[in-house]
Structures are given as structure tokens and as C-alpha cells.
Image (cartoon, rainbow, N blue to C red; front, side, top):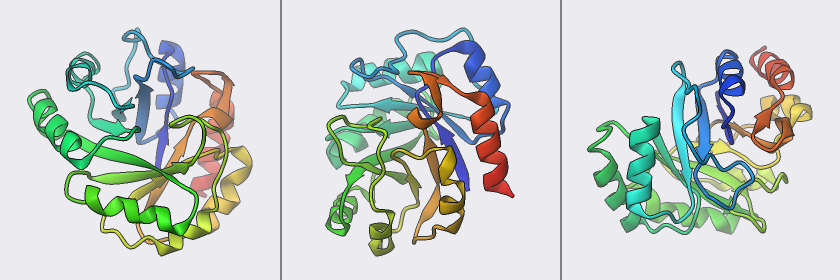
Amino acid sequence: MKIKVCGMRDAENIRAVEALGIDCMGFIFWPRSARYVGEVPGYLPEQCRRVGVFVDAAPADILAAAESFLLDCIQFHGNESPGTIAAVRKIVSSVNPSISIIKSLPIAEAEDLGRTEPYEDVCDAFLFDTKGRLPGGNGRQFDWSVLQEYGGSLPFLLSGGIGPEDVERIKAFSAPGFHGVDLNSRFETAPGLKDVAALKTFIEQLKQ
């Protein structure tokens, strides 16, 4: 079970969350997000993978962020085409040849899973999120049972409104390709500031 905590930007909060032993930490580069990271924090994680989250961003902006944050992974959270993702991977690989790619897709019903197929050859994983007004961070869950219909070859992270009360539900959940969870707004005391104690309890219970 991989654990990704997204929407980070405060140096001391980053350090404290990293110490919980998470696998990935996400930094949001979409200026309209309440969790937008406008500058490099005073501390960046060293023990987990750094994920940059972008929404229809210009390749030059993605490259600049990859260089300044030394990103390990690019997460596309907009309407990026497979061709655009392939082109960005080629550009960013000059900074990190082993860069990995996640494509986020909004899910409401099983038919939405058909959107994964065109991205199979250009991505390394998917993130399935709740359809909503915003590209992400809507704080709501979708019907996870539709993921039983997922037939793709890539693993996926489950996202969208996961909170401290969902531990047992996640432990009981299974679906083809289920690889881990993405945690964000339901573990915050303020946008971009995570409740470390709540995360610690959640992670410990999840791993029991």
C-alpha cells in the first residue's frame, strides 16, 4: 500500500510528514489551487519521492519546476493529451532520466475508466479522483465499486476525499491495479498544512 500526501508547501510540515514514512509527497503547481506552492520551500523531502502536480501547464513551466524541486514524478491533472505527456516526458528526462508519470482521471461511473487506454503507453500509473468543479481537491469521494471494472495494465492510486475515518474501508477495498492512496484536504488544519497527528494515526492503522 503506497501512501502519497499531496498539497504540501510549509518546510516544517514537510519535514514532519516525511518522517511518517510516506512514499510520495505532492507539490501543486496550479496557481488557482489553495495549495499552490509558489516558491521552493526551505526544506524538501529527501526520503520520499517528490511529485509535481500540474494542470495543463506549459512544458517550459514543468521543466523549470522539475529542475528547482528535483522532481521524481510528474502528475498531470488536467486535459493533457497522450501526445503532450509524451513530449513533456522527453523534455523533463533531460533533468531526470528516470522521471515517472502519473495521469489523474476524474471518475464517476465505470464508463469513465475507458479514458485510461490512450494513456497506457505514455504513463506509469493513474490516479483516480472524484469528478468535481475543480481538477482536484474537491474533498468528496466517488463510488469506489466502479473500479472493479478497471482492466488496464497500469497501477492506480485512489484519491478524492479520503479521510481519517476511511481506514477500515480502504483495508477492505480491492480492485485490479489498486496500488495505494492519495491523501490531501481531509487531513488538513488549513490549506497546505497537514495534521501530522491525524496522518500518523491513519498510517499506523492502515499498516496494521
